[in-house]
Length: 424
Ligand code: RNT
Ligand code: ZN
Image (cartoon, helix red, strand yellow):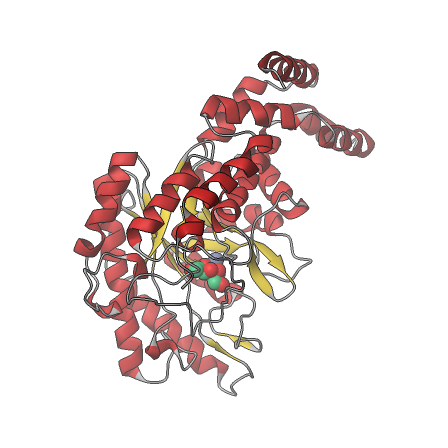
């Protein structure tokens, strides 16, 4: 299809939006400016590079699929991330897990990691203008195998993990300082059980105590944004999750921490969008883990569904974006990893764009006038507006492939790069 036909359809779309009072140029600018943090762990199935051939284990999360071609080393992972970035329009960051350091072929245990293990990443990211976010890693480790970490009955196990998280805070703060933009440090722990213990209270008291020790050290807000993530259930923690949503909601509110809302971590009929205005007045900010829950899995590749659309619309409508951070969180080894990675990012960006294209002023008028019918009708009209022409324009302006060319680009990379990697 020729450029002129595409250009014309964008022009027509812009006119239609203008007739609803929507400035398409403003919407494009605003949608592309929201940073989305790309998670490093989709590239190697959450394995990390602590040991050769390390894999995800002991942590209530699981990657399924045998698609060949996963990144087997840090250079391969970086190469893949560089490819993904060329497929993703708009501002982006990179979120690293603590097991993705450069350990120089030596085994460095979690209670011994240091800023130096991440200075290569900091340099790499600095050169590419990609700010880094960070994650403590309290799974895939023998001291997590019993199902408990920071809430473990054994003080020595708790001390080990406290030391780990304290170190990740120092590393994240160093990242934030050097990049001039706070690094978001997310803490998720797998603690829980297949059947409920009798003493739930003990686990929660120990978790709160461990967290208080961890967050006692103060860092400036411009260096680090500490966030805590709860969950409904996990594999092996079906009955009891120590760090439940309620626990962390109360904890974050009383300790002035960010709260992480992972879209896959709630009952299916709960709306994460509805939580934004309920929680935001009481915490410094929110980290949204952009994910997709499906039956027992909370980490499916993000697609443009109702939940994501509603979430993006809520954030734009309420003007909350400055206090909300976006981090992708899904892992799929059953389809092309690079494609899955970029597809989720693009869907998140599409949701933001569609939200900025909403006829907000007209909708608010209907709201204020108490005209429920007009509001509903406008919302329905908005759904069928030609936003995809605006999306294509976003891609063109950002120098990334439009949807029609996206599949081909992913396949070309698979042909030339990932398919050449020996199956491991
Ligand atoms: C697990 C949490 C957590 C992880 C990542 C890998 O249920 O969602 O955020 O997915 O840390
Ligand atoms: Zn998550």
